[in-house]
Image 1 (cartoon, rainbow, N blue to C red):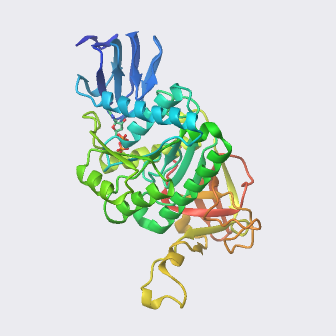
Image 2 (cartoon, rainbow, N blue to C red):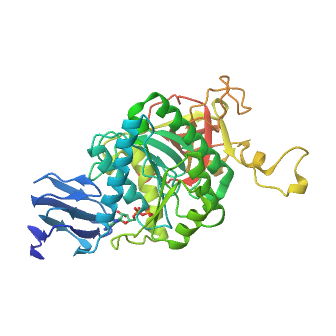
Image 3 (tube, rainbow, N blue to C red):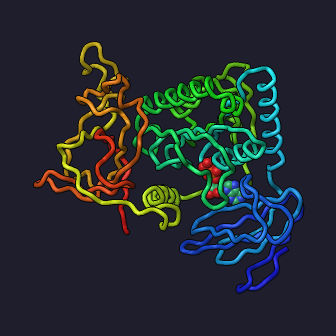
Length: 431
Ligand code: ADP
């Protein structure tokens, strides 16, 4: 039940195995405090008498295994207690994964590689976060593989990445992202360039496997792969491809029986495919809401969490000092392809972009590839496509006369590298 007034906050007393769900109104903030008992948010434990702040649009569940009292102050769109949660099923899933890790440890094998799939807004990212938190709280070092190019939990949208989890997610900010391994995809949906999407999935799988070979803890910890909500056609094929590239052992299907049946049919029999219900607390997000959270993610990259911690730099970059590419040429009919060339080649091609006014507001990835002659193969032989990115800039202005563009960058000039990859994604810097 809830009691209290607007000034002191509303007190909620939760029985064991229940959760308080709330959403923060647009333009508002809500403060949460644990008064007694034990509680967690998506697997991260709350500290007693610490004030947690949640920004506009946050959708939160405070779950308690043992029972607790919390207070909420600020404007919530909804706030209610639910007894009906799938948390016990999620905990059992974690327990099964932990058993696999123990067995891996005993038999000197590798730990579970888990792929989480389902349509949009079923709580995939939340389940990933929960499983990673529970694993790291037991001292494991699981890896988060983020393949959701629309809503990345690790880097800016339009990227695919891997992050070794070393501590539970911060209740307000999520997982700390020091040294993630990030690749440029360039748009918010895999369908824009499915060949590239599958190729980068394979690249991440290779890098992860290499790491497992030299790092026993990473190998035993295994990985949790978050995927896109596109589960039909090529989107479905991308899931099957991912399962094989990572050699996943477990697939958790959230909410969709049809997808569950298809994967059971199409994946090798030794892959355990498990159907899990979605939580009634997961709220559908509108297109606008998704766009806003993408924007917020980019703003966070430049300005830090809540816009106060980082101070980005603005400087001019001469066109002649950089090489800008787009990955993938527009597809042309098979009959028009030059002899010996396939559609794959066009989708994975580096196409030089000549800088113009239309670059304004675009996000550019700064490739880690060694600067070279521009044929896509660096001096060390690794192509731009397979190279991770070392950061992002946004073009804020273009002066074609002077042949320079002004960019927003997290670090002062000069740019660390000169190969830039253009994203479809734009960011308008309102600061
Ligand atoms: P998906 O990854 O499938 O798109 P998310 O995991 O991002 O879905 O969840 C969608 C939204 O629902 C997020 O804002 C998340 O914080 C919220 N959410 C997830 N589980 C709950 C819950 N039990 N109660 C309230 N909100 C939740």
